[in-house]
Amino acid sequence: MSRPKIARKSTTIDMTAMCDVAFLLLSFFILTTKFKPSEAVPVDTPNSVSSKIAPEKDVVMISLNKDGHVYISTGDSKEDKDNKREMISTINTSKNLGLSEADINALVKAPFIGVPISQLSQQAKLQTEQMTAQTLPGIPCVDSANNEMVDWMLAVRTVYEGQHEPNILLKGDNVSKYTSFKNIIFAFKKNRFFKFQMVTNPESVPQGSDLWKQATSGKKTE
Amino acid sequence: MAEMDTSGGGKHKKGPGVKKGKKMSTRVDLTPMVDLGFLLITFFIFTTTMSQPTAMKLFLPDDTAKPEEQNKAKESGALTILLGKDNNVFYYEGILKADASGTNFKSSNFKEIRDVLIQKKQSTDTADLVVVIKPNDESTYKNVVDILDEMSINLIKRYALVDISPDEEQLIKITEGSAPSGGK
Image 1 (cartoon, rainbow over the protein chains, first blue to last red):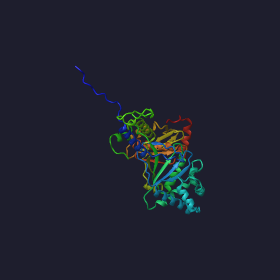
Image 2: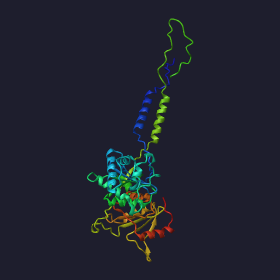
Image 3: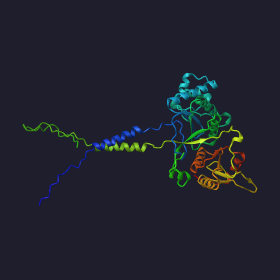
Image 4: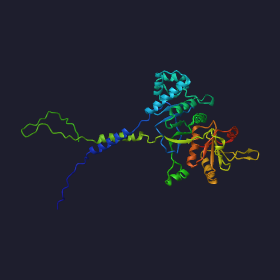
């Protein structure tokens, strides 16, 4: 009795297919990754259970950093930039700043506005890299007597009059004091903005709470 | 396997039946390339943050509305939460009583306030329940967002953000002297 001969097979596997898969996945991840733009004003946002994604269109963003400095910015799309230009022009005419066309262009290009209205022309001369939380004092709104946010929100109201409501986003830092927040809200109310959104980081709903029960029972949450 | 022919061209076989030059395999070992590919994939997966910032909505009341149009809060259904410095939370039900006969002003913290809210929610009619939030100037933005978050966690529909009154400010000052520093 002789054993049937088994052909000795090679142990090497063709790696081409696996290589294809690996690089396909790699290119997928590279292309879908959006790098977080480095922020000139670092803001550490609090957590909330809200699951609504922050909007990215028609945005007027007010940042409140840890020192209570306030900065205003808009979205990156062309419409938003146009609105920003109009906002700055409105402030320019109402406050008689005498900003030149070049100054306004520079301010529109700047990632955010963070100076008292009287110093706008100085911010226009700064390079983008020079605009950080250290160099810019922020829009004054510490007390209600000198609250320039009211002027800015009035400009926003003027620009968006007739258009749809802008998405007002407030991005506040964990440790910033309530005083600044209160004055920002005051500026909103003064200009009939009664709806705004606060940017937060998502957080899981605590187990056993009413919201958790509602979510697990399958009802739609707001 | 891809191997380089390093033998050099010195030994040429001679003869009519021998072909010139050995035919090299065109196969390349792709294992290191696959390794590299997966390494990069892992890198991108770990550096990508999946979380997008979320937004929390807040509706503000119109201050200019006529007093008769404002909704009145029933005393029995009202719960006032005061936020102080160092994450301290204070609360009272109904109208503030702070005279010799005793006080309903209690101190709490962010962990315990949820139980207070749940209890209040169970003991009062949903239509009457209203939570008034009064942060003082020492409290932080995080405190305000946390307490608003508690409202959505406990599905409290009616709540308002109101400025603090001097009396309450005074009470917080007095109590903070003795209150244990709030948790969280």
